[in-house]
Structures are given as structure tokens and as C-alpha cells.
Length: 133
Image 1 (cartoon, rainbow, N blue to C red):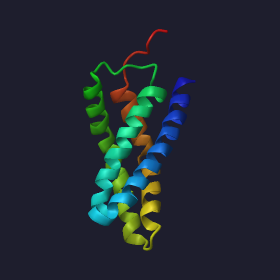
Image 2: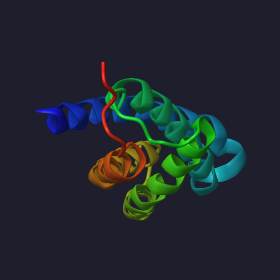
Image 3: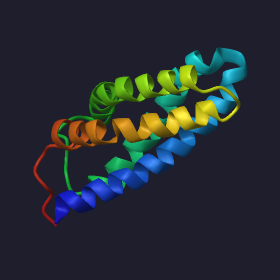
Image 4: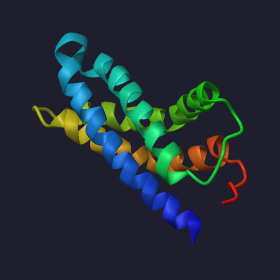
């Protein structure tokens, strides 16, 4: 069942993206704040997940676009999930306080955006026919 395998792989890659997102957020937050830092951490995580999803999750599919075009399409389609993700993040920061609230917000946001991001990646970015081989 290819779709199930792709979803599981996408979730594993998303976990790696979560670690990148959180790491970058905690590094840049002192300079950019918890809200501003989230933009940069999202971009870092989206870049890592694009590369890993391209290499592993959707390796048998082609997007039909150049590398740069595929990357830009991936970033644009991830914005739908990013909006869901950021909304959960903001709500978590407003409801909870303390040093772990941003980490919990990133985790909840990642879970909230997972399905949206998978659907957009699978059916809009990596939608091409499978490669023969």
C-alpha cells in the first residue's frame, strides 16, 4: 500500500522537520522573538523536509518541475499547513506560559498541519507518475 508507506515516511520526515523547527526557533528567538523566530524556523524546517521527502518519501515520483520550481511549489503548498500550524502555535503561547510553551506549540502545530501538508505535497507537488525502474 504505497499511500500508507508514503504517509508514514512523510510523518518520519516531519519529525525530523520538527526537530529542525524547534532547534532553529530556540536559537533565533532571543533576537527575533517567539513569533518572528517562527518564520525563520518554518523556512528551515520546510527546506529540510522538502529535501528528505524528495529523496525518500516521494523518490519514485517526479514533480515535472525544475529543482528550484519544485522547491518553490513545495514552500507555497506548505503554507496551507503552515497557517494551521502557526495558529495552533499562537493559541498555545496564549494559553500556556513558561519555557516549554513554544516547544509544545511547535509540536501541536506540527500535528495539526501534518494531514494538510501530506495532501498538498502528495497531490500537488509530487503528483507526477511514478518513475519506471
